[in-house]
Image 1 (cartoon, rainbow, N blue to C red):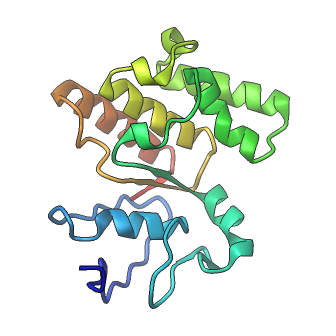
Image 2 (cartoon, rainbow, N blue to C red):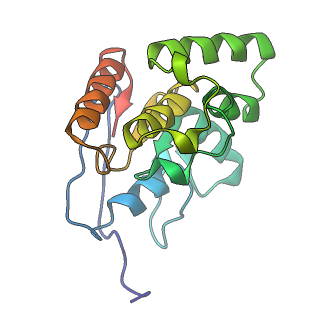
Length: 179
């Protein structure tokens, strides 16, 4: 029913460079919580703050989304561009990144996520694991302090899961806070 809260009585503090896992059954509010962290959803009660910026303050949303990137459970729900290269550039363009810096960031990201051979491929033609890697890459290109991943391995086969978990370990080793 619409009047049952998805998340209730939750208080969470995450420190820099932590790796936090939220677990629970389907329908327990994990995705709702993730979407509240970057302001896609607003809580009916209480508040969500990222580094002192409230998601309820429209003026703070830009700062929050510079700090925190969200990878959806299904990468098809967030891939919007016609090529892998343009998908990685998309968020950088929206942030107004200077062209030379954007080109450098796209190149670095494509290389570090082993996406060179897919540079000009349409994202919708990639495998599930490749799409998930691209979705993570597009978020990481923005250099967030926090990376929130909504069930990042849920739709993947064992090899894809292993690949994504390796990528996440590498990001954590680089100091990205993972949720």
